[in-house]
Image 1 (cartoon, rainbow, N blue to C red):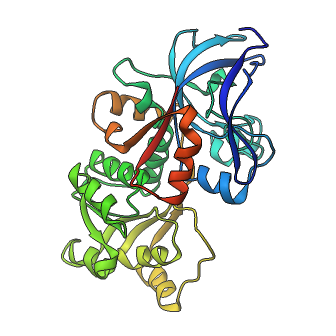
Image 2 (spheres, one colour):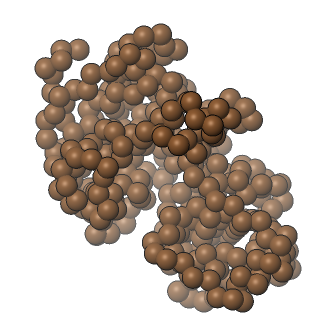
Amino acid sequence: MNINEKMPALVLHAIGDIRYEQVPVPSPRENEALVKIAGAGVCGSDIPRIYEHGAYHYPLIPGHELAGVVEETHGPSLVAPGQRVTIKPLIPCRHCAYCQIGAFGQCATYDYLGSRRDGGFAGYVAVPTENLVAVPDALPLTEAALSEPAAVALHAVRQGGIEPGDVVAILGTGAIGMLLAQWAWYWGASRVLLIDIDQQKLEFAKRFGFGETFNSRSGDPINWVLGNSHGSRGADLVIEAAGVPVTLGQAIQMARSLGRVVLMGNPAGDVRLPQAVVSQILRKQLTIRGTWNSNFTELPVDEWQLVLTAAAAGRIKLNPLISHLVPLAQGVAALEMIRDRSEFYNRVVLIN
């Protein structure tokens, strides 16, 4: 590709200053590939990065939920030009103690598309060839762009040690919550209980059969979960995906004795737990685990490969989660819509 060629991109110049403009196409280094982006999902973390907290450096092209077509490769590669791929955004150092055991999410010096280096709200992105995953022909690239959140949700469910027959309660029914619900069904849950305060999201989840729903504005979600779990015993697995301080306490109180709680939502502020809630952790002997990112080593489970296999076979459904397909040229307006919540949305995918 001509090194002087330009591409469209959404470029963050400062907090709140994101512009649609023409920038140079990135030049891949050795062992990297240039990928033409077909679809880029807007993650919930992108909005505070753009409008509140800022980035590690400027200018920066955000975007880490990506799929596209390989344009060119540099160095030995298992992918070839023309191949349809999705892209793992975490770039581990592969040398630290955690990388040596395959715990890439805990890498001490990782890089990351869309936050530490330029991402995919653009025409092209340059990435290590090791981060490319071939997409099955049966899966559209706009859906493959949601591989990353689907893998993150899968990882969270696996962190909870899910077992067939479990009652699973999920606090938060955004796109991640609905992916969590689908993976819970995939793993053989007997019931999936979805809690939120947004009635539109709950109705959306109910319409697609993702689980039973409850609006916390209408009553006590703890009593609702207890009343629908093994004769008031409590949920076997509770996943907190809302990132709200109050829901953390609720998750602990919803879990049965010897149950499991997974903390997934990034907290929107400091979390303070009442003494009585902390006592429940002790008396119930709860297992509480955090979750972040996903596993993409071949063993024990390559969660990205499982996502693509399950999605291509229709065992999990990604297309219903896409509420907006927006041309990249209209991306700034789409980001503002998400920020302002001016209309209902689920997952917004920017397309070229």
